[in-house]
Length: 171
Ligand SMILES: [Zn+2]
Ligand SMILES: [Zn+2]
View 1 (tube, rainbow, N blue to C red):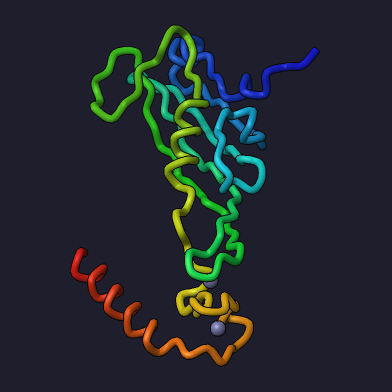
View 2 (cartoon, rainbow, N blue to C red; view 1 turned 120 degrees about the vertical axis):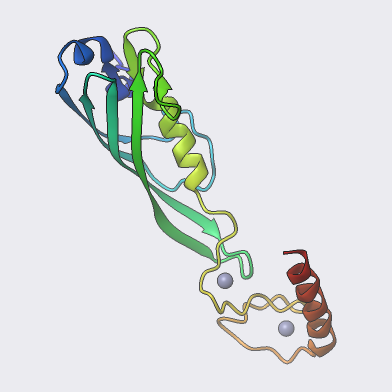
């Protein structure tokens, strides 16, 4: 029988709150599809390493989530890869007394929605393969990091410079 892979992300809050000091570990490697996170940037399974501890006020869930990603460089379109490591430190409460706390719904704490949100927030937008990436020649399309061409790009380069200046003013 197929079991729900997200079951591991649920904590029995009622039981933990009954006995302050109760500890639970969540260790999982989750498929993004199982997590219901659809994003082309995700390049592998989402690693979850969280520790939950109950106290008289609620349940503290802390640890890390890691997600490998692969995104095209915004200048040369070569694949850039990395791993997003996200630090988690959240409080779940029955009766909210801390303004940053999450409400415990029913008897369970389900970490899946929070993990989804963290992952999507931490994926990079338009990274560079390296700070001085030379990009692509606007005339012949050659990758200037790997080769040089004889295109006369001086005029265009001036225009790019003007555009860059405009963008800079916007900031
Ligand atoms: Zn690049
Ligand atoms: Zn060229």
